[in-house]
Image (cartoon, rainbow, N blue to C red; front, side, top):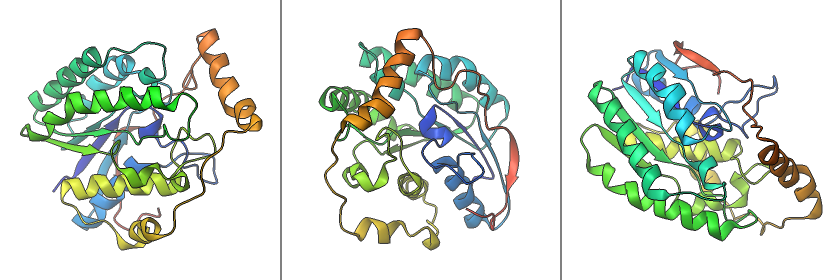
Length: 256
């Protein structure tokens, strides 16, 4: 059983798309911490260093050592989603950086939770290109599932998670239902019971959502601002800091 958990990554791990009424974000990593605490029936210490917009290099350079220094029992590592959206991406170089980072975590005696991000490409412009990149990167890393001290959770190939019901209006980030499903995948991979009150199985059994269409309003609200940030060298994470930089307790009965 894990009694402390730290997460590093980008918007996927920060929890973007699962916004709470107070303006903060929750996300799958928060759900995992709650699930671990519920299984342990005692508080679990949890930190989340992820920052939206980060490419893989900055995640490793800015977050990895800080997370290792916290000495958690479990450290989740995800990245590469923002790299896939750039004009060029070398999947083998990216996979090599993943492997090096995972070995650093293992060398510190910390159990690695490595997970692929959910696959939004059925709903995005140029989705087939991004889907191919994600498939190649996931395939290049799948053998790590056999490495001692590593748990690999493959959300990218979770076909049900591609349903539009799990995605926020920008179609790039999961909504609350999507984050809960990823957390369910993670807890299952760790051998930890999924809290029944999350309703993950009931949502999965419901009819699928309508086919997604990208309207002119969608391009105006989401695609053009994203292109504008790329052209000006800005990021959605500029000026942001980690939402939970230290290992603080999460109680088993904490409100989700």
